[in-house]
Length: 266
Image (cartoon, rainbow, N blue to C red):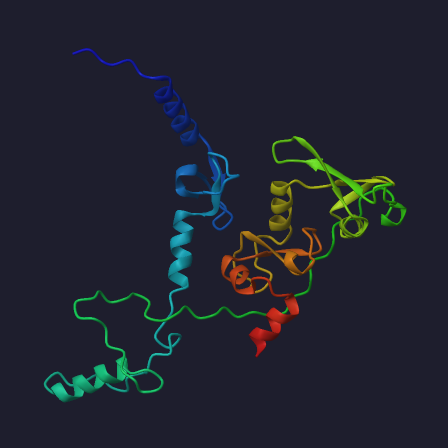
């Protein structure tokens, strides 16, 4: 029986699988180098073919087990004593007390429906006010006071993409001054500034600076959150961005730091 010749696509897939098997990644949780197959893939549009998420699969399972709520955290009523085996009335009362909510109403499940592993919401993490991270050392060069807009009233801003390509765009004097003051750009001349970080380099810098620790709750974090949201005039600078876990990042949303902490304390 004749074998069909392999297509170039099959050769590419075989080469990619061999390359993925040889590549390794450091897990920030257990500090062990593991193959890429032990990590979850990133699915973003800008993610490369070998992009993986922070923790390995084993550490993610351990973290989920630690976050499982108990009956007290779920605010379930405690049973003072186990129901007697031969007393059906006491057993029915125990079931009724368990299903009854805080207002005494019954919430019976549909017949034949599988029991939920987590009947109620997960408990909110304990948040605390932490000192803001220190700014990076001031890069050499003039400060923002030397900036002057061009005749068109703009400031030129240039930088590099994640793949090394140069880009140039226009901005206003106020934004350029904020970027320079908050150590995200340097002054090239009176009409031009240069961004210091690309997107990936900036995220890596913030996560390593905060040691992959959430600024709000102290748990493991692999996302970046703006203390002053961009919708309220904040910028992506080292002084306005901190490391955050996914739960705190989604809970904070577009609220400012003061509003978010006051809402939690109340």
